[in-house]
Image (cartoon, rainbow, N blue to C red; front, side, top):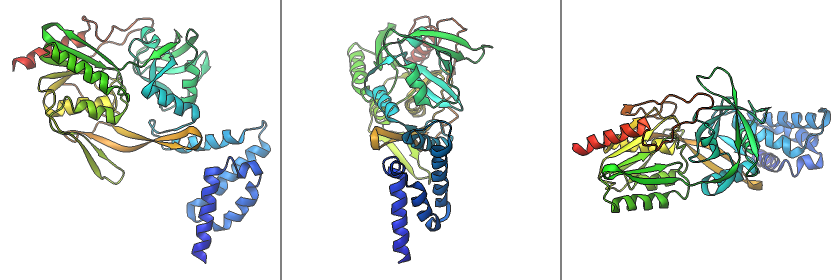
Length: 401
């Protein structure tokens, strides 16, 4: 009888937690339900009682009326935020929709990849050819205001909604940049952002060049087409540019790695209990030297691919230390077109190196000074770009071995 009663209580708790907005709050019966559950709650589950009390206090006493759904969404978002893990966050309906756009379509905005770091919204990388890149936004810029509104401490989905808007409209981002004493404003005109993720060309001496801007769900085919075309033109070595590539789909990364890396692991993922799963590719890979360009905007899937190439000995890394995002997130859809994105694994490189909060150190370190306020960064594929010049030099040396 006791076990059955406890099971019923747990069922009630589950129903309350998953349907609070549409049932308990809507009927105004929280105190009655709470009073029934209080004596039954095992251990820490008594904290649910506190949650109900706070919600009811806000509804009864707060100076302004608050929508029930707002309270519930805030409680859920706060729960995930308490993990203190920036890549893990709650996705409301708008944020869930934006995430789907980011991985597969187009949108109107300025063209930056951002994440929440401490209380700041930090730029992982500007997207190639977008208004943000043309305006001089760079990796690790911190956005502290949007159109004069202070957004420090504001949830990332809310900030993204402020930045995005109709093409042709202007938004002003206030930027805090390392090495620049005072924050400064960057006015940007929004545009329709085409999420093209692969750029390629043949460099002199039959050296191929492929730049991947992000590992979206639809990136594998254009990459494969570009690689095939360069091979058809007689390519003898490849410069793979992953600078300012914030990552994306692990599946896409695996599909691209299978075309470049020799047989064996490309990464290992480790769960909370230390269980390891290895992702292997069948080989034979590209079978020619590869030089990978990386910088502080190369994160996640970019680091997986760069690490696999470095560890396999088929090429070298040139540029700056990578971002250091060595974790894998899983998106779990919830009701109401919402979801939660949480870190489910840490990953290790092919040779079991840790990347998280460490990054990858290039074989040839060459930093480019950050642009000052108002300066436009040199394009990544500019023939005069020092990192690209160095990559070509290293690739030619590898071809002579």
